Image 1 (cartoon, rainbow, N blue to C red):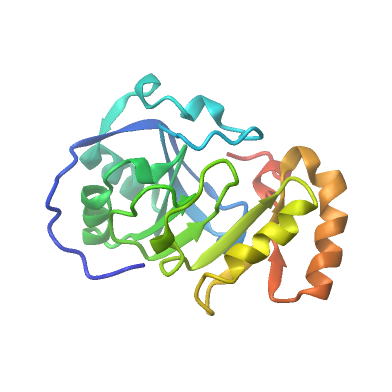
Image 2 (spheres, rainbow, N blue to C red):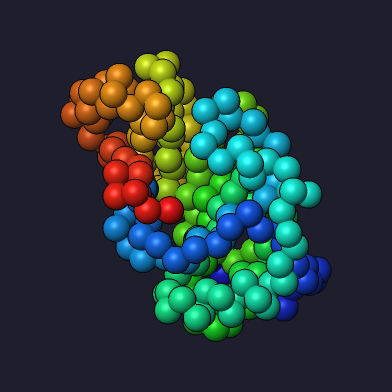
Length: 210
């Protein structure tokens, strides 16, 4: 949840970065909008279907200065920056978000909620995974709940999380890419029966962009 920025108690000078790029958001509530993505290294969740497993080992990726990341985002011309991973909450993001907001940029994060959420955020996309339980305090901070549907059982599992987020939290069901042909029809029928949910597709993969 976004709050007025304060000077970080712990200033993290650099972060392990797998990649950074300016693109069009492909999924969730902000699909179709331009955004600068910073993908941090490090993840201890271990989703078997993860499409960025190269991000798991933080030590495998170079440490890039926060001031450099902020400059790259500004130079791209973006209005918002999405911090993703890996699992970005493994890192203290107070300094990064403080500096981004100070430069007038909006801060978004995509997280499984398994670690404390440090930083100032305009938008929190919470995507829990079965492989590691989220922390309790993430539910009140989420603006968006995004459930990746790998099997039909995930639809019932999704409801357990929907029952815990705020009433104004947007709800999305997203077919896992390799299971999309089988899961998408199930999700369509489910959303028609449960219209509080919306469908999220990985449109960036259809457009062949990062």
